[in-house]
Image 1: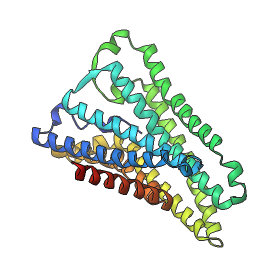
Image 2 (image 1 turned 120 degrees about the vertical axis):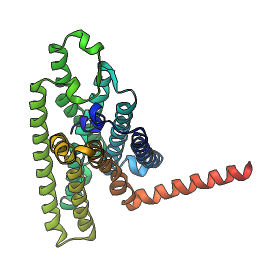
Image 3 (image 1 turned 90 degrees about the vertical axis):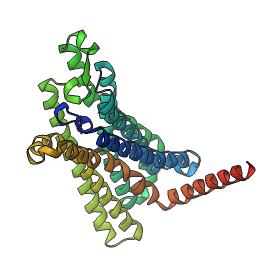
Image 4 (image 1 turned 45 degrees about the horizontal axis):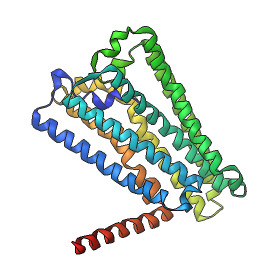
Length: 312
């Protein structure tokens, strides 16, 4: 998934008017704060109730939520920078890009792991407790990060090897292509994305059809799990929009030359913001247990604020 799709809305010859730029930045910042606020409430609820952090399913959910918070924060920062500072130091940009890429590549891996956990819970229920332990889940999360780092860090090493030292002290418009521009890196990126997609869709289809077969003769829980797998697939489709965004830039310029920046802004919202906004709804608010404890937390917080206001 390409971080450049976040920032290309500012190109010198297609720069927005001041009013339009302010409106877009306000929209992005408000959406980012809203998403992170809901996610922070989920994390707080998770942290304060033992029922969650002893359950592998909720550990995977909260890892996805934390991952999305980092991703949203980074992409919003890069978006605002693209309209204000324009160019930043290559070293600083590299850090932003690498962190964004780590979290971006974690998302499909996390969705695949959640689908497998669902499959085990429904199709192999008697072995679920033995297979899906907290320790193994934490090891799985560590493996996700290791996989993402092994996929992304070669970009940095190749750039360090081929670029002069002065390059890292220069200032650039912060895109993946401007920092990691070697053709070998671009080819590696395409191959990596294809491998990720093949593995993810294989896991989604395999788990869905196995759960579908079980749901025909089993309980309501199996049918709920089947719907959950469908939601995994839906979110994966949204995440895949990031893969297509770089290829859409040239056609968008040809189709909407007068509204190029607006088209790219729409792509940013669809590819970067929307997939992260549905995570708390699908995996937090939809879950009865999570919803119950979250409601308690919010009601308690509102009650405390009301008491404080009366005290004042």
